[in-house]
Image 1 (cartoon, rainbow, N blue to C red):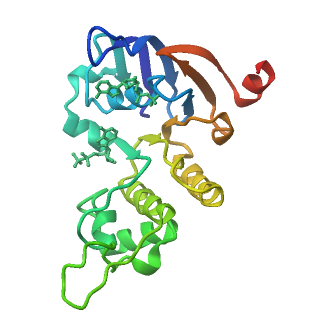
Image 2 (cartoon, protein in one colour):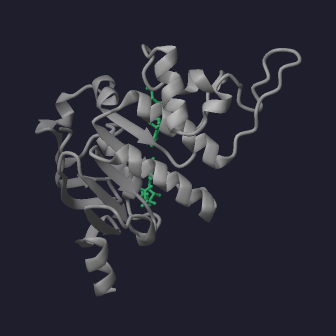
Amino acid sequence: NGAISFKDVHFAYDSARPILKGISFEVPAGKTVAVVGPSGAGKSTLSRLLYRFYDVQSGTITIDGQDLRMVTQKSLRKVIGMVPQDTVLFNDTIAYNIRYGRPGASENEVTTAAEIAQIGDFIRNLPEGFDTKVGERGLKLSGGEKQRVAIARTILKAPPVLILDEATSALDTTTEREIQAALDVVSKNRTTLVIAHRLSTVIGADEIIVLKSGEIAERGTHAALLEQN
Ligand code: ADP
Ligand code: ADP
């Protein structure tokens, strides 16, 4: 479940400047659709609308056929998991930061999620900069390790819908490949909307949508789009 549908969605932050100009696409349950396109095209705006940070001005967004305008943001957050570009950690242990995905989770579940995300070794540590106790030093996490915390959080939360918003774009190439592999595992069989700026990072998506100036310029599989370009 978790099928997403955008139907003729129009949106503007400021009525003088339309950002999305009639966007229609679907992410069938369990599938992955990637949205690529130049900076400023409106890609992240799509994910903000799906999270209901804003409401559409016309058109409809549904999850499992239910209009988002009928769903509270609180209940949406139970359904949608998000891995953002830069994960901001709370002033507490890595374990706490992972448990944020599902506050009721047991120690064991947190540990297992951390191990799957390959950060099992330092879940008792505090992130660097958050040295709250005398004599206790925070641990400096690399960008990739922070993304692993977000991945562990998502594994624990196990949401039916996943948004990956430029989740690897702040990483170097080698780390990007590693984190991408971890994200592929997490997004398998989950309804996933991937926001990316390069076609090469979304090879495995079931469909790729190229967004330009708030309109769908092209769509198709990775292979089909490569052929056209
Ligand atoms: P992308 O993710 O493709 O880079 P965005 O969806 O972030 O594009 O932004 C699309 C356009 O909307 C950009 O021109 C951006 O400046 C504008 N924009 C984004 N957020 C806001 C906001 N909160 N208020 C006003 N304009 C915004
Ligand atoms: P909660 O209400 O559960 O505290 P948050 O406000 O921390 O949730 O946001 C939930 C998720 O959405 C986090 O992964 C966060 O990084 C992401 N997020 C928060 N604000 C934005 C935004 N303006 N655009 C995109 N993602 C966001």
